[in-house]
Length: 214
Image (cartoon, rainbow, N blue to C red; front, side, top):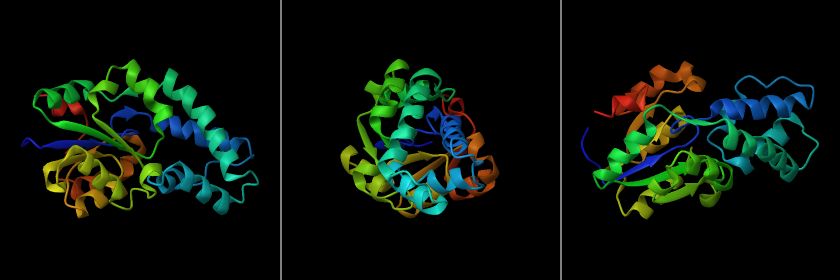
């Protein structure tokens, strides 16, 4: 694979094996309301960012709590999971180190809030490898819009065609691809049903970062 000026990584399901965390959050949230997790719910909210996901959840399922109360409930469950149970995807740290050695600048573009995952990244020694963090809440649009990737590229001092974007979700891969980025699809069990779609939209598809550590 050619050397790019910048690399932009999603976190949940891409660098972090954390989609199970959000499933736990969703299960606990809906169990508290005597409901199962609705079919397609995780796929629907994954690209949205916390605030928009809370709006969607409240409006779609007639949740009585305020948007702020919904977010606080999610954050309480998620922060504990990030700090105690979330792990890096296999080979992820080695790949980040190899990019840094080649002079590639690194950014994270995520729908999660930094205070939730920061401790996790520090625990695994990768927080200092990331040059810039951009969140959906910062740009005000979810990953169905290219704004988060364009902002990350701008911070990296690179054009879209000079950057790789690593994502596990079809919506995000499709958005980044249309915006001119080189897209690497990353397998995650939460999006296993979309593997063929993700392969087709990606310039390269990997099941494991160790495939790139050669």
